[in-house]
Length: 81
Image 1 (cartoon, one colour):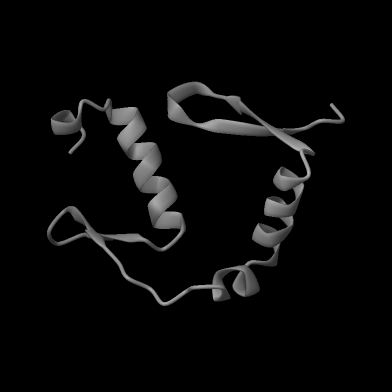
Image 2: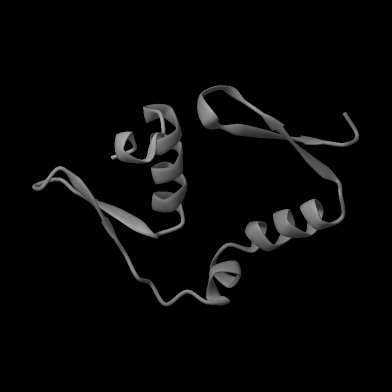
């Protein structure tokens, strides 16, 4: 999938993991492939996951900084550390 875009496997797997966790893609076991999902979340996503709204508030306030991690992942650290 990523070869045509010039992306390495780790980056594609990380992106698909993010999209799957947010409900944007699913995986068909029979077809052994990912598929795009359209879900009517809108603002309801933060109602279903209140920690997401709190996390966005922390990032907006500068209380969390992103540190690049291995294999295309990132880690969040409190600025108090």
